[in-house]
Image (tube, rainbow, N blue to C red; front, top):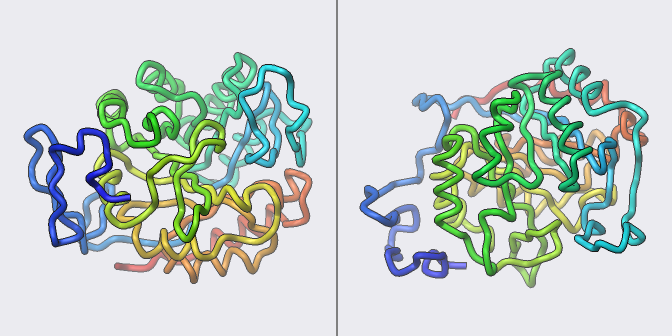
Length: 310
């Protein structure tokens, strides 16, 4: 998708220099490449792969679900495929991540229900400042989660409307919590030979495709990207290496990949394919979620990663 197809496209100019664009409404000319964005704005950027833990919550319980089977149906969850349901609370997982000094983990509310919201808030209280939260976030409630202890809010469907970026909603969110606390979930599925962002529980394709211009544009409103490879998410089929390569090459801000990690070798594949610039989250494969991959081994691997000066 080109920049011209975004909402408010009449104010965009598609320049010959791919890393330059005009932002709407009297915003200054912005140059995004080859310089990388970094929240501390240092000249030397420290890059290094990190393991980002996760807590997925459905109806108040910590679960691992095949994301592509989630629906908005009011008739029950007969089509829902659950890989694992934990006896531990979301707060217990949060405390474990805190004890292991893991930061930037994702608390995702898979259902917009009071039980899931309550469990998510308990997790944020157990590890204040150490976790991000997503699921049903909008400009009205985003700040409340920050006040409850979230370091960032994660947003996807709210900033898309009729298949394109809703610029007004994106601005509202960035103004509500600040760019430095906003994570955009650009989870995607393959459509032809390109990756299209999907919304509404990953069921609806948008007309937004991940490429350099789209990532550069969105990076002006977010601190990080979170990208699930939906075609492999929760299926333990191996990673989407092509998607990781795209993110490592084109994302101008920190980005985390999720989907398909099964064995320790997958972590190294992400490190190489992502040029040492793509973080990773692991769900169903971990033994703490009923899988065979040792959580302790992944934490050890995480602690051994050395930052790279860029």
